[in-house]
Length: 226
Image (cartoon, rainbow, N blue to C red; front, side, top):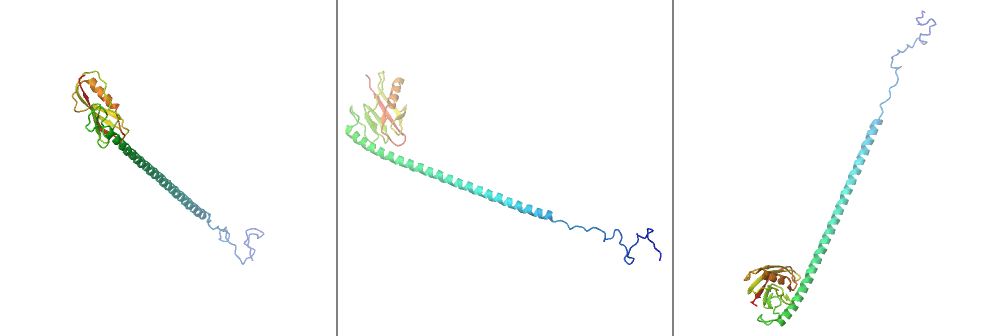
């Protein structure tokens, strides 16, 4: 037999002639390829689950905040309604007490007015009548104020002019009976400014009984030559 080995000692030949040598690039000599890893897929799924959980927590927290805000608003509305109701009840109670006091005062003033009047509205004393007349005369002058009575006497104007005639003063009286406004009205036959100013000053110093709200009326001052 003839040897075709590469080396002189025949080391390059296959020791087992029956089995042929495998080529270098044969699949037998190729390294095994590892299976693709699934770590990335599992990590992505974990991140999605975590993100969904976080979103659920945010939504739940927002719903809780909205509910708390609505509850606070409802409590505030209840507090305001209760305060308004209490204020309305207090106002109604105050008006009721004022009405009772006014009615009692009017009854007393009516009794005294009838006792002090002369019936015809003339004389030197106070002749004002009680409610509901709302008019009378005092010291030669007359007054008219719906629903009110005169307290004491009409204040007489102080003047130095020798005049004759009448001056009508329109008045507005507050709920306490104080004259808060006095202006020259009609009929008025005296044009003297000093005398007119004296009548408005006297009107502002006159007092009437208390009543509900502001009442409007007039005082007529009569002047005779001295």
